[in-house]
Length: 231
Image (cartoon, rainbow, N blue to C red; front, side, top):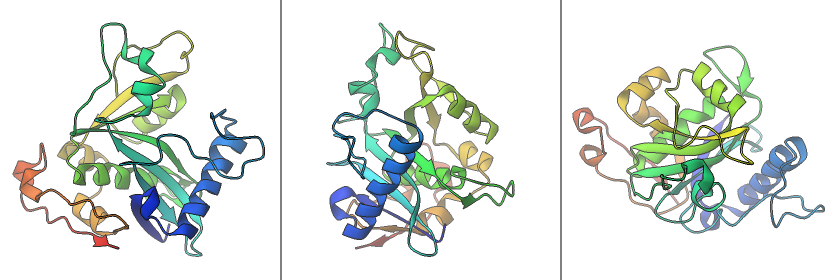
């Protein structure tokens, strides 16, 4: 993982956008055999209806500028997966959240990214970058729909992953809705510094960062000096 970029789909350079679509197709369609509406049998890229608008894409690039990891973040004030595709996971008495401080992460994947903590290669080294990027947009919590094996992987990585809504629903036996609080304890568990991570992300979008002392839940970390590159 040589560099990390982020931006809305329309703001990403065309070559990165093209390689991102191909990478997602290899991971989610060819390897995981997901059936995604709108993705034909002859497609070479994977996109869906949640990729546009205010969705922010995080892309990891290798030394030879190939995509080796990705994630996407979207505010829950608009359409997102849990609300539109998996509302049953919220339970009969619950409702998927709608708040500018709660963002959803999906399409998280990585391939061959060195993990200096374990000496192995996986996609998990990209995870803290997705969390701090959501934090920079004012999020205090990230939610998502994951398979049970992935939930166990996150917990082994040291994350305080909490199941939200129901633990299972008809037709969704192997997946759960979960959340992670973006508090200082989370970044301590990840053994990373939010400022360093955020400063290493190159942005291709004009979203304005909140002032450091306005970040929810981080008022006592007023020494954070968030900055990023904009193109």
